[in-house]
Image 1: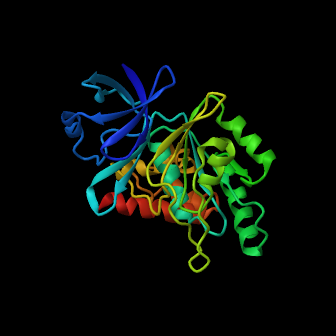
Image 2: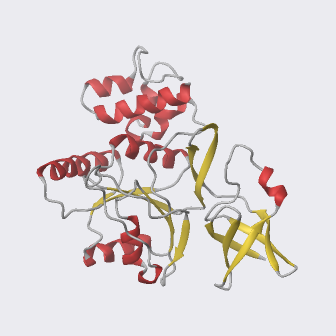
Length: 302
């Protein structure tokens, strides 16, 4: 019997069967040791094989993943957390304010999606915010990321026309929604799937930060065939298993220049005849993107 994991709560899993029904299943003990570095061997989006023994479903095998997106686990430097698997498209939800999404977070998530070959777009929510600071930051984001090659959509999850546009974007796909707490993931889920009844929490006025309302990753199925994976709000995003010489491959504007560097293992810091550094000095690469590249490079070099 085959199915897709739709929710993971630690010891139990919700599994969506091919006939559309959903069952609870436990994980067989021996599967837990398949990947010692991962804190969660079975994740939302996994295709699994099930047994039904003594009135209980159990996960016998995890099928090979087409892709997955991963981040380093908190306080466990040698382990990582798989956020979700078998993703057709990821949407990174960001906000210019209330709460502000840090540029470092954006670039780390984009680089991770590049590393695991997941197509990704950006949903810039809260276009109704009218402060000068929010508008200035919004204009900068809308100018920067399309020049690199990323689609970015200026939207409000409270606008029916924008929700209709997003429904077209997710049609017939398994999509991942990710972002820091408070950017509007649960609001979007409720707009796309009114029956999901996702809890929405107000942003803290004192700290300009959202509160976690999603505790576990969960998949929702839409009427027109789309599947949406909602993830817990992510505070930070530690990189996993990146070789220092490959980090620049996950920055499209740098990747296009690599063949021109003098050294094949150039990491684009102090090497002579480096086309990336040359482009930076010529204003062809965003200084903030380069600083975030250096941050990832430093982290994976440790």
